[in-house]
Image (cartoon, rainbow, N blue to C red; front, side):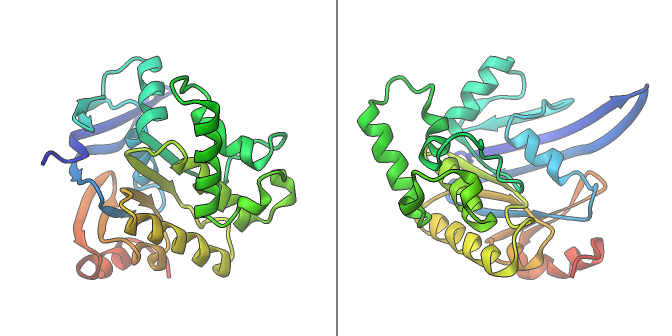
Length: 242
């Protein structure tokens, strides 16, 4: 079976004031359907840029990116938006909920442009997603009425409502205390057990330990890729995170 994600010799160069910054250099790896992958490394190593490329928020400077069997590195802006809406669910560190929409309206956003889905089916999907994160009872509330942990759970519901091919999580516990961080990670564990494919950027070894596999980035290159137990010392060596 072909991998869900395949990156081959991906490089990303940012140009600012005629200065070239090489964020990624010839990065190659695959992610299979149903895998749970953590991407770790020191600050500024390129891991967030890598996640942005996986999410089609950044275009590559060179290399090949295949998602769900389709080459996506050279798509137009509109085509990238369509693939993001169909195949990718995002979980951000800062939640990114819209303050003047209710919780159920926020969760329904990825379904807005799916005209083939009936209103009744959209309502069913929203309720199901909120139920999976134990937030259905807050469906009519607004983000300002929720704690940070509750807002992140709503953000997870929004990410899964469209049944994406892969969930991309960028430091999903970065703004949470330890209790709420554990609750969010427990939800991700449950989603993975239910078959979700997850790729998570994290600086927290406790979060990375939840994954099946660890990819370690340093200076824009992969310096480790394997089971977390085998790579954990390498994470410590490339980061001061405790």
